Image 1 (tube, rainbow, N blue to C red):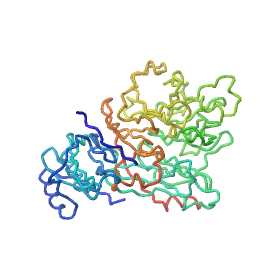
Image 2 (tube, rainbow, N blue to C red):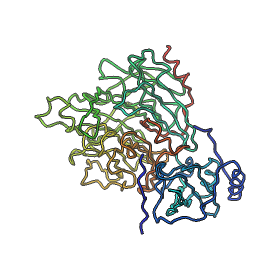
Image 3 (tube, rainbow, N blue to C red):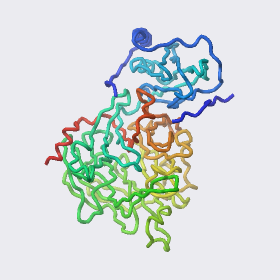
Image 4 (cartoon, rainbow, N blue to C red):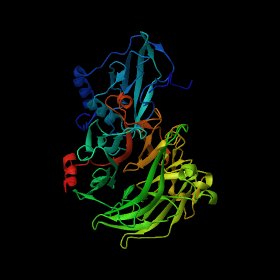
Length: 518
């Protein structure tokens, strides 16, 4: 019988690293810590359900990095009174956990188990108490990959975009623990609360933080740039550009950042289940030289829209999305009536690092030929795979239910644009959700982990999901672990623009704020 969940779930700590030399230390650590953690006995008797437990987050049979934080989970609070889980490592070491309906594993013990299970799996058995009766569920495995994940992640925490916001922050999280610290918040430098202040689009050069940036808009507007650890605030708006820089991408080796420049608008639906439409009235692409504070035009087609630049890992190509012409009869009409017909294809241009010159435009993926729109391209660190988000229309798939992630081997691209018929994409069935937005894909620095922002849990909040990528095979996606598994339910914030980092941002909030006094 195929194991199925019996029900559908309705829906910060000091950084530590532990390396144990052998399995004997694992047993010792578990024994030592047993006196100060909750290690309940498994039920003496229970009724077998022949089903997987309906845990949240769903960590049943996932593949995770060998350095990830504990995969804490819980049973539904409206159905169960208690939960006990027993974890068994490949060498037979066992430990039990349970506190109410939650399973929360101490970091020391978890990392010891990861070390003992690298390249293998941890067996998980779960019991749940319901109406006074203990139920036993079908055991599942947590597969431990030999490949690690980047230690840090950053994101903007913000209310869903149809809610008025006041406070917002950009935070960073240690993925090997539960430590979360603040990079910047909008209260410290907001000099006009009537206008407000938006902070967004944090970006890093090659996953490192000595060269990075983020935008500040409205009150005290400007782009905050870190150049070799030195902070400044710049205004990239020029007389010949639509706006200052918007969506950024750092060149992997040079002090250059490609940006789109955008005149963006937001509209709200009353009947459309997508709720919000974000669209551009105009958008071009620019290249910003950090060292000289100079801006040059990459492309500026006044009749079409160009957005989401991203560099290839070797810095030899700039990929971007560009709209296709609307039918003649629609070109002069209000975009609020034509937005659903605006679709983007994926292009690239070669780049000469010595001259800063760009080559001719090359079509990489023709989405519009299949009545689709492509956004947010990302090339894998080894250059072998192309990720992007694909939806019916537009450039803001974060709010489109039909948006999914697509991955195409770059060996299929030989200079002629690919399309739905000629491309053979990687199977991402275990990554994408069926009926909710999956967007903002990115690669870990070693190319073994895909990260996306997904609204699959409740259709309101974007949360961070990871999936193991191994030679073109993608495993089941899993939710960002939290110390308290209930946090994803109680935190009324979206995780916006999640970005991998191999190191934390070392500049403090106070240091960042000083550039606004100049």
